[in-house]
Figure 1 (cartoon, rainbow over the protein chains, first blue to last red):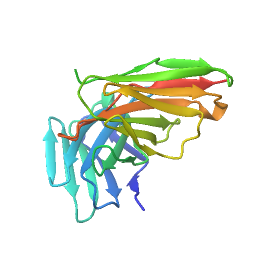
Figure 2: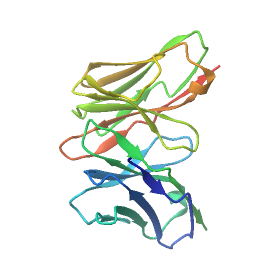
Figure 3: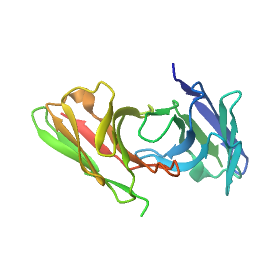
Figure 4: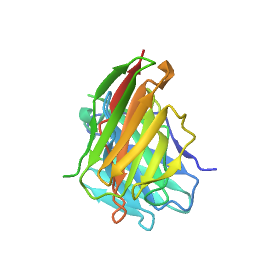
Length: 111
Length: 112
């Protein structure tokens, strides 16, 4: 079957780095995404990575993809209180197919 | 314009009402999605439209009826809903060329 798993909760101090991890089982995934969801809001696309890439950096965000281990991570540098939210990883085979979400990781940033 | 716009933002309806949720994007995306999200849970796929044709229906009850009138619009028609259908309904669209997949802000539905 196809599963995407994430740890439920992460707590960090303001200014530290946060690393949110995700594992998936479908080796045919083509795109892997990270979304941020604040309370009562929709899903904000943070970044995404194509499956033939190992790393993608975008300002404070670094995505690492280990295809062999089917492991995806999101590193947030200099974490701020405004980064507190639920972070979902998701994978898709190709456009027009199912986007499968992980259960979400709640990030809490302490001042 | 990199937005997926959903209306209404909030909807309260009775179990006998008929209402519709609307989704619009002008990014030229040819795949559009409806997701349902309950509190503190990940979104669950309901429907996928690819090139205006329904390509995936995840065994959704017939009281939810999707419609894709053109490449920019996606509707979800609601009829005879149950209180357990109360949730955040999210629309999304994807650019096949780049893989970017954008969500709207959602329509929060309450069924009384």
